[in-house]
Figure 1 (cartoon, helix red, strand yellow):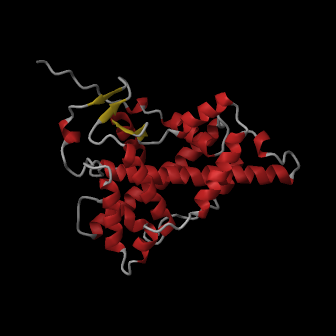
Figure 2 (cartoon, rainbow, N blue to C red):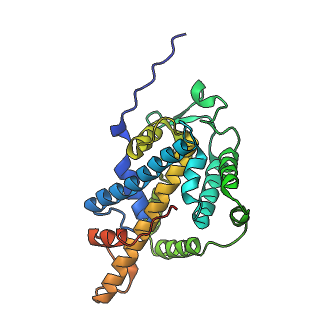
Figure 3 (cartoon, rainbow, N blue to C red):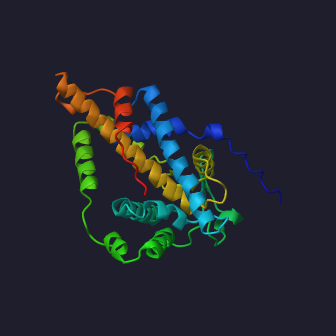
Length: 280
C-alpha cells in the first residue's frame, strides 16, 4: 500500500496576525485593532517568550544538561506563586480536553491517527489527561524548599486579578449584539499553539519559529510557553485599555468604555513601560 506523502509545513501559513488580532479583541481591544498595534504587541510578546526560552536553555546548562526540561522554565517563576497557580490551572484545563497523541491538521481539518512519533509514550506526548499537570507540580516540588509554594498551588485561594478580569469581560460582552458575541467567542478560542484545544503540526511549527524554541523543547514545554504568551497578551491589552479609558475620561471624550474605539499605539507603549517583569 502506497503511503500518502506528508505535506511540507509552510511557516507563512501560520496565521500569526489573526491569532494576535483575536487575542487582542478577546482582552479588550476593538474587533479589528490598529495594524501598527498588532505589530507592536507581537514584537513585545514574542520578545518576552524568547527571553524565557533563552533563560530556560541557560538554566538547563547550569544543571549540566544539554536538554532543557519543564523545571528549567518553572525555575524562572519560582518567586511568583500567583502566576504558577494560574499556569497549573491552565494546563489542567488544557489537558482535560486535549486529544493526546493526535495531531490536528489545519489544512485537511482532520486528526492524524497514525503518527508514530507523536503516539509513542515518550516525553513529547502526555499519555494521560493529567500528565503535564503532574510534571509541572513535580517540578515545583523540587524547587519548593519549605512546602509553602505547593500549599498555595493546591489551595482554594481566590485570584483577585482573575476575578477582576472576569468582571471586565462580563461587562464588555453584556453590551454586545448576538452576532458580535459569537465572533468574540470564536476569537476567545484562539491561542498561539492549540487549535480548538487540539494539537496542530502547523501551530507547533509556527509557534516554535516565532519564539525561537529549539527542537529539544517538548510539546509540553511549548504549552507552558503558550501560557506565558497568553498571559503577557492579557496583561498588556487589559492595561492598555485601562490607559485609553483614563485618557478619554481625563479629556472628557467618553466616560463609557462601551463607546471607546480601538486602543492606540501610544496606549500600548505607555503600558509596556509600566509592566513589571513576571519572572524571578
